[in-house]
Image 1 (cartoon, helix red, strand yellow):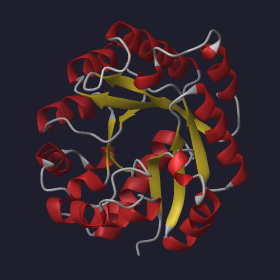
Image 2 (cartoon, rainbow, N blue to C red):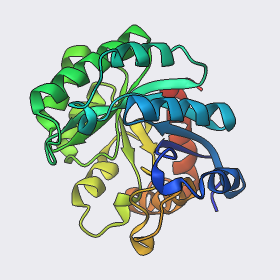
Image 3 (cartoon, helix red, strand yellow):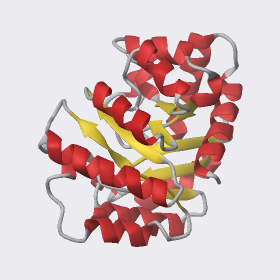
Length: 255
């Protein structure tokens, strides 16, 4: 067990936790988890994320609309997020971004909803939690234009894109994907980025460590990712990786 973990991207509002949510969250502090940013995917899940942050002292909320839901928004969605952003313990806008792999929403609508949420993050001086699936060029362009404080979660681009993003001051989130044998981009990127832009995350309940695939992922599993990242980089111990990433998270999310 490694103490001091901050999981910067989880989804404890997900239905996979419906019958184990309280038991899971209540156990995590004893397993070394110091903080969690619960990221939302819709207006409805944004309300749930805020509710979780009010129940658990170590849970914070990011509110926003995932690109999969961009084409399924009712009138007033932006006003709803605007109200939620004034709530205590809301520390970011997201999960928002672009997904050109599944294309569940038309790309022009994804872009419109993404840009609206960038403006929200700037208006409220809050960081942006960015989803980028096969949309590297448009994500980079948006971040270059608006220059929000941001993290690209579950980073999957190559080392060159990582350099361009960190040059903009953008943080990169890495989790248990680094333990998978086909994660060449993640491994090369986590090896090369400046340590001050590294964040740790799970994407819980998804993407557990490779040797635990098939299980529900929980925030304590970040210790496995930290061990692998320490091995890949060779310049810090797993505990140092956890501590540095936690410092980075506190700096970005201001908690």
